[in-house]
Image (cartoon, helix red, strand yellow):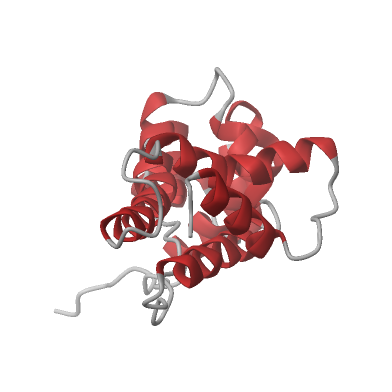
Length: 190
């Protein structure tokens, strides 16, 4: 007796769906993201999408969860140079197509809490931890004030990019170096 088998499962479909979902989140936001449009652009069917993710919240959370910020290969040992390198890495990441609008999507009231939580855990928190570790290293080495407010400094590092983007879409020349210098001096850097 010969057993019939179904179609061979396409191993690339998950990655295609997640890539399209990330783009749609960035372009349309969570509320306007359509599962039918994601399936169509990914070259699959809605039933195939629903076999993998039961709904929009689960797909959006998986799409955000699949975003992993690239780590620097060998961060510099000097805390100031490490801060400049981290901010340059941040600028490269946030300048990719759709990344800035994805930040806006995460700030919408209609974004599912699970989606926002995954974005914070996978994208925001690792960057903040790296910046904080750099500044703590500088503090331990006596390169910045012992009582410097590192929590606010971490927020200012990346927050200055978003504030600038709202005011003017053109990044200022040497943004990582200029931002690092301003933060460093504000923390009593020597």
